[in-house]
Length: 350
Image 1 (cartoon, rainbow, N blue to C red):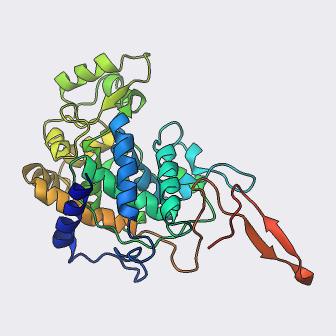
Image 2: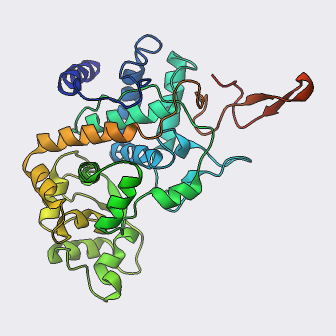
Image 3: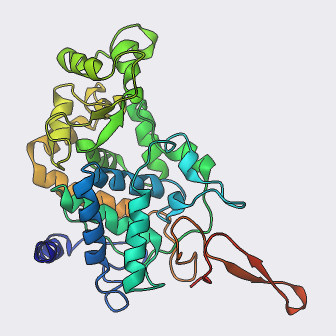
């Protein structure tokens, strides 16, 4: 597996070597070349081992990265637990009882700290975990630039505002992405992450039984597929899990777009990309459905672009010792005394 990983890296350098990795000159794909050379391999090992027990994990880690970046940037704020000074994003409506993989990120952090203590940020660990997850599911290798630092804050209010809803119209989706300076091409490419993973029945019940208060199913939903979904998600039944792609639920491929073409997008926000009359997204859906390489290339570019949102670098932020808590920090006060601002963890900011 180590050889497989190294071969993929070499291939990725050829394919992605010409990409504009970051608008921030302090981010670099080889940021840890001298300070923590094995970091990508360490992350790969932990995620691979965990995904063998939980095939849903790669999709969950990609989603976790997305939900982090859309709230005050890719700074690992989503990993912070509630404390006396932190109101965690994990209990925001789009995240509560929904995000997964937090324990695996902690396992990765422990493994990385054992090799390179105090060097790699949780923000970069989450980024590399998304990179590795794509590989493990058969998707593109995304050579992310690294060098992010971790935030000292979280923002639950922003999480409730910024994260797109599964009930969003196309205009609402475009607006949410525009806030992050992501365009329509990014929207369609990044939505392709719904080619793997699961969703809860709660998010599709209105499409199945009472779309827009009509008492009928969503007309953009294929009737045969709607019946399959009703069998899994009975009205008033348990909040079961449904595969985004009924055919290859754990494989990263172009089937997401092929499903949209036959009215088998799981979420309303998915199907909007193809079924909104006259939408400029339709041509992109058709292109990606016909050409998986084109989808993979666009997805990699858009992931890198998203990964550059609001990053903290240099002396901004910190490198957390534990991903769920900010480090203990010492703050100078009058008369030369020192007051301690503490969260969980005992190590000074780096």
